Structure formats: C-alpha cells, structure tokens
Image (cartoon, rainbow, N blue to C red; front, side, top):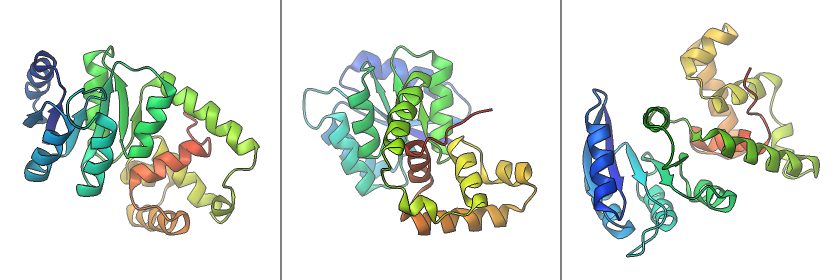
Amino acid sequence: MVRIMVVDDHAVVRSGLMMLLDGKNDMSIVGEAADGDEALAKAKELKPDVVLMDLSMPHGKDGLTATAELKKLLPDTAVLILTMHDDEEYLLRAIQAGASGYILKSAPHEELLSAIRLISTGSAYLYPDATKRLMSDYLEKMKNGENGSAFELLSDREKEILAKIAQGYSNKEIAEQLFISVKTVESHKSNLMEKLKLKTRPDLVKYAMKKGMLNFE
C-alpha cells in the first residue's frame, strides 16, 4: 500500500486528487497540506511513502523549497511534483531539489497513477517531453566533456546495469534480462553508488540521464 500525502494550496484540487487516489486498492491518503510549511510538519509526523507536491503555493514555503527540505528530513520519502509549469527551468530545479518525479496537471489520471506507483518503488518519473529535453541538454554537455572521469571507472557490466536502472527495471527484472542473480545485481548497484558517490536509486537514475543513457528499446 502506497501511503500518500497531497500538498496543494487549492482545497478543490486537493479534494479531487484525494478522491482519485484513495479509491485505488494499492493507495491510501495519509494527509494533506496547503503549503510547504504545513507539508513539512505533517510529513515529519506521518512519514508518507510519496508526497504529491504542487510547485506554486503563495503562502509559506513553495514546492521547490519544501521538496529540498523534506528530502533532507525524510530521504526515503519520494516527491512527485504535480504542476502546470511545462518549463525546463522548473523541471531542472525540481530534480536538483531531490524530486523523484515531475508531471503536469494536464496529464491523464492513469499517467499520474503510474507515476506514483513508479516512484514509490525507488524509480524516477518524468513526462515524455521532459525526458527528451533533459536528454538533449545532457547529451550536449557530454559532447563538451563535462564530468566524465567517474563514469570512466565503471565496467561495461556496471554501465549496462546503470542503464537498466535508469529505464525503471527492478533488480529482479534486470537479473532476468542479464541472466545473473538478484544478489549480483545488488552488488553491482552498490559498486555503482560507491564509484559515483551516490546514495539512492533515484540518484543513479538522474546520473544516467545526465550521461544520456535513457535509451528505451
């Protein structure tokens, strides 16, 4: 069961989201908040699995500030930014703040549900156009030779597993695809985190995105 907290300054929006999500068998609403300050206080108490966070909240802390502080407070809680801003600057700032996902309020309900389920497993989610933008941006940076030293330390197998992680596959799915054990996948993932100085699976996903490794077949 994914435990969710909804943060939005509009009561009608919060009510609509909670009705949608609470009606699913694998989801439950554990709290709501109208601004970033309230979100931080309630998250500390409730420890939700996923926080659905609005960006623009005129009172108290905004969504980006609240996300950054929440991730320091509760690093295991995934934050999904739900916003009307289809803007690359907001997207990049959300990722830098520690968000595990970014989705537009205009997205279909099923896409929102899929995004919540995905980030609750430790993966990352970006709406398709956002992924294309980031890939283009980071590929350009790669051409300019940015931050390549740590990447060169990775073995071919580690790079292969990093790409699979970025594509959203679980450890079990990666093991089945590469004909290795789950324990071996976990070992490679630990080595990846050590070499790249990263701490979480979403961090690996973001790093792989920067290296242009999100190639879906």
